[in-house]
Image (cartoon, rainbow, N blue to C red; front, side, top):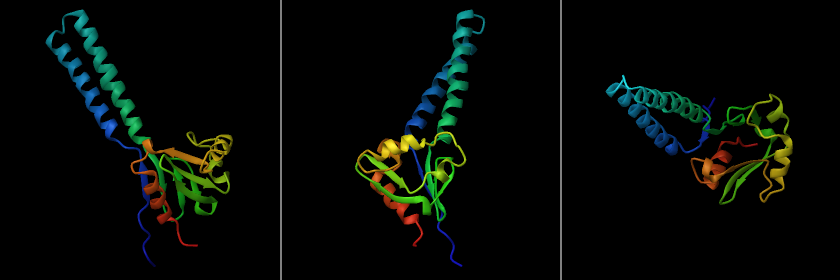
Length: 164
């Protein structure tokens, strides 16, 4: 029995998140320095603790959350999983395509996508509205949220589709 290929994972580019993590870390460190240098001055203490809380704790939490949400889709032999949502079997997928600006998937049925009621999955009304746009796809991702060009994403996903 042949081994199946590893799942294809499409994520959002993480370069901006890394840059944002560095900037928030610098501001948090500046807050620590302000508190360490003059812990007895009330204004310094307030500004330092606020910087540590806002940039260190808040920024760290936000960046961690964004990093986890950067999964766009995962395609394997069984189907496509949109984000961390439900699995859409290949039998429910009509076509996969792209143009220079977007990558899209057209579905035969919406049942498997909406059966589990996951957050972040577009409603049937939103998908019908997307279908009226050029390309006629139900699920659409702009090029800016993909880690590759839309055409490359479409080709890579189609390679994971098992032969019928």
